[in-house]
Amino acid sequence: MGLARRLYRGEIDVDFVGKWRLWYSLSGFLLLVSLGGLLINGLNLGVEFKGGTVFSFKAASQVTVEQVRESVREEGVHQVIVQSAGTGWRVTTESLSESRLTQVQSEIAKDFDTPVGQVSVQSIGPSWGGEVSTQAWIGLGVFMLAIILYLSMAFEPKMALAAIVALVHDLVITAGIYAWSGFEVTPATLLGFLTILGYSLYDAVVVFDMIKEVTAKLGHTSKMTYSMAANNALNHTLIRSLNTSLVAILPVAAILFIGTTLLGAGTLKDLSLALFVGMIVGTYSSLCVATPLLVTLKEREPKYQAIARRLASTGGGKKGSKSAAVAKG
Image (cartoon, rainbow, N blue to C red):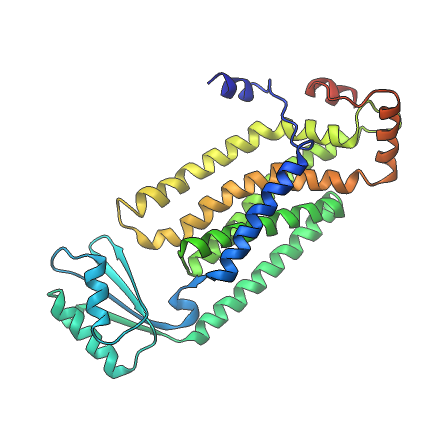
């Protein structure tokens, strides 16, 4: 509790920039694990993308996932994904012919004491899924281009590059978690991915705006380097970032852990997992990836190299208090 109180009072100065090797190593490990999941397992694409048949019904009595799965497999169906939603069931299979579709529908009705007319059937072709995927990639490309243009005009190209790297970092890790967990990727999941991009961008813009304000005061007689100024700016926005993340994550966690488990709202899982993971990773990347990367790029500029050499030669450039650094520039 003492640490949390000091943190929220702004009495703790975290050296985010100085620990860049730690953050890069951690991010590199997470990216390798995520890419491994994508290469080994791949994404479990929903029926909306690869096509198939969906049976929806309500059982008259209490049944289990295994009972539903075996009932469908008895008709020779190989790819069977069973999901429960309250008292109802959703069974996804590969594309079936009309005759086999009718057989499975009749078997479900017989095994679970449900009228055949109440076992709804929906057949989806893979072409529709291809259209959804294409639109999603187009939307992602337009979003990324808009980010680059906005950050380049509002801040500078190096900030735009750092933000884009952080966004790609968030997407890959979130997708990797989907690959390892086997959660189904649906159009709702894509909406979640686009949402976390916006959230991660907002967090990065808040940090970059403060960095821009603080580093604008740096000159040839400055008493701190660019990395010190950026770290001070980052600490000034730390509480805001943590509060924003906490407020956003709590309702999403409620949807993910309460809505999908206790209430059986399985369809919310596709969206809530992407949001939950993306918000956590996005907060981490804005603090520990985007800013250290920006500092790495900016410290190569002659102006800031000269400041660093001068302070190093005079024994200056040591980390001071946040308030003093911001005030003196």
